[in-house]
Length: 353
Image 1 (spheres, rainbow, N blue to C red):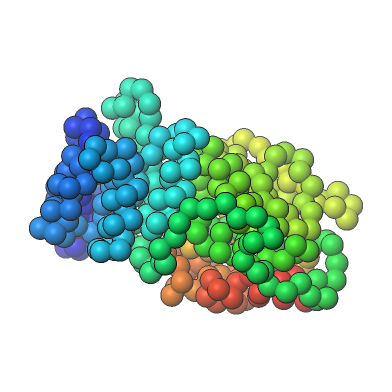
Image 2: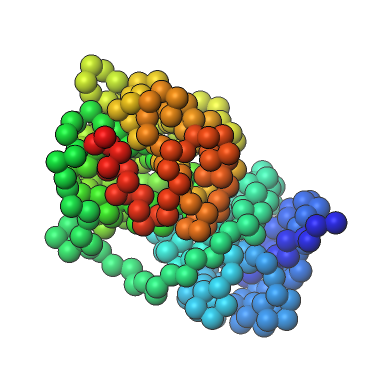
């Protein structure tokens, strides 16, 4: 019998502790080893119970979840799944938690907690399992800040190798992807080819994430809207709960943002984006698949490669979760398997090839 995933639930609500515990224990490979009502109790239980994964509420008495998370990741790094409200403030807090090292997050319903949380059971189980498989990468301590474009980290030098305006870089990511994408986007020069991105996130979070990246990057980053033209020096992130596909009209590319059933259990789906890039961009596209759980994007990346696109998969050493890139590599979809710090340079190089 394989070793069970040991989970500690930290939440000030007794109802939430009970609901989450009941849901997680539906999975025979998960064992809830304890619960805690605040971070001080949690700290002692982490020491005595040695859990594999922590679920952590943001709003708690005596010490808020972010403060506890920051202390935890310095003293005892471990996979953490945050629970956050689906509000503008909740989105900002969640992004900060991901910066501090949280692997995943779950959005809590405001009303009818027991009923709505039960609807999320499959998602919660999947995210705890993803967290258990995560590689906790060391991170420097970061302070939240707004950065002007003049003060942004120096991107890669723009080069004459980007000779045309009809190149597109399509990127897909999931678990661990917010920080990986941010690092990737911060390295791109102002005249980069247009970037189209699917990151598995719920509604509202993608808008906050895009705005956060826009403050840090030389290129412009925004949540995509249906009909947006894909322009050099711009990155478009698929909005949560909507698919995004690339479309072409003459020499110009546009994004089609639309509602349709989930693909690979995801909406937006990386496969939807990659398959559309294969169809309408072909050899004018570069495909990049990054850290994430599952196989979304693997078949689409293979279609891109078969259509003449150049393709990149993030390597295992720099992935938080190596699932999506591993599946793409196994299919023979990746021309290059490289570490996160080199992906931006390689993508620009391939876009000019």
